[in-house]
Structure formats: structure tokens, C-alpha cells
Image: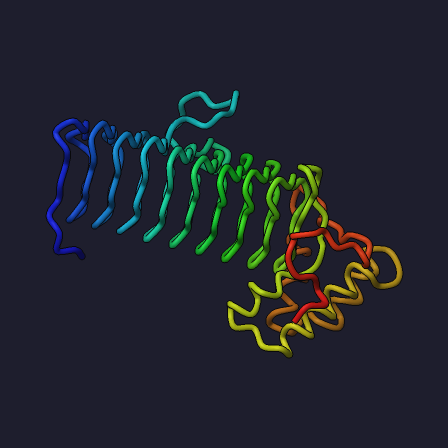
Length: 283
């Protein structure tokens, strides 16, 4: 609930059937379609385009030249009714684009408290969790699944159907074609396909994981990527040792739930990319 008045600039177009919550502010040259729903306190700065069956959660702020809810960039799409849903308290900066879903899933979904910097793109059928940050021009292909508290670096590109686990970090200019485990740090210098360079220890600490949690997760990571045998054998070893730990078990569950993409592998153990952040040995 908000106490501020609803304000619609006379140079904006809002379809009569659009549903507006209390305290909505719509700036000049915005276009709000008939099937759009805006929650309480939503702010649209100038030149925002909202199309299709699009729902914007309360207090979300959208900056100029962003376009949300337009048709998916998918040659198989034939105009079927699909949706976009963006959560509460999000910030979408200039020229962000979010396409609605295809009939394969029906929806593109972004969670609460996400921050999408300028030129970020979320393609059709993506599922983005809560508290996710997209740096400038970070790009998701179709059907990508992103967990909670993920950071996507500027100009990174995530291939369709890829998964990125909770608390993971993707470096700028990194191409992501494999699933990134929870807590993983993916980096690929100069736009090449990324590889794991360690754990996002800083992010883990910020989320309240204890030193003991960090130690156990590190042990699971070492077993998975630097243990003896094939990856399947190492996964079995890690499962036996770490499945019941709340934090480390998240890695095991993520890998077991794999879909179309393989798991991103770790760089050789001594690899450290300048500027890429802490490795698994940092705490």
C-alpha cells in the first residue's frame, strides 16, 4: 500500500483496460497495453513500453527505453497467449528488454528485488530468482534458469536452457554454455566459454554461511572437481560424504537435477584469472 497519488503524464498512453495499483507513476511517452497489470507504487519513467500479458510487482521502477512483454524472439511463436511476470521492488535500468514466454512453458518470470542494469536482456521462458543482479548488457538466452542471489557480469551471454545455481557469480564478457553450480564462480577471459575458477566466498559470507559451512562446501567442491576417477565416480563420492549438509547438499541436488546442459567444469587447480575475484582457497 502506498500513500502517494497516481500520476499519469498527459503524453503517456495507458489502455483503458490496463490495471493500475495505487500510487503508480507513468512518465511521458510510455505505452501501457490493455493486458498489463501494475502493482502499487510502480514507477515508469519516460519512453517505457509494456506489452502483452505483463504483470509488474509493487514498487518496481523501470527506466527509459525499456521494453517488456513483447513477443518472444522465437521463429516457432505464432502469437499464442503467454506472459511476463516481474516481481516486487525490482529496478530495471535503461533499455532493458524482457520477452514473454512461448507455449513451451507459457511464461517468463523474474523474482523480487532484482536489479537489471542498462541493456540487460531476458529472453523467452526464462526463470530468474530473487535478488539477482544483471550488470550492463548481461544476456540470457531462452529457457535459462537463474537461482537466487546470482550476479551476472557485464556483457556475459548465457546459452539457452542453461541453469545457474543460487549464489553463483558469472564474470564479465563470459560465455556460459554449461550449468554453473551453486556458489560457483564462472569466468572466461575475452568472451570465451567460461570455466569454474573457485567458489563465490564473498557472496557466501554475505548470505550468512559460517566458516564451517565454507569448509564443508569447499570439501564438496574439491571432491567433485579435483577428486579421483571419472566425474560420475566423484559425484558418487561427494554424494555419500556431503548430501546431508544443508549448504553442500545444494551442489549435489543441483547436479542431480541436470537437464539439457552438462555441468561446467573447473579450471586446472592453479589457474587464477586476474581480476576475477576470490578462489576456493580464500576465506
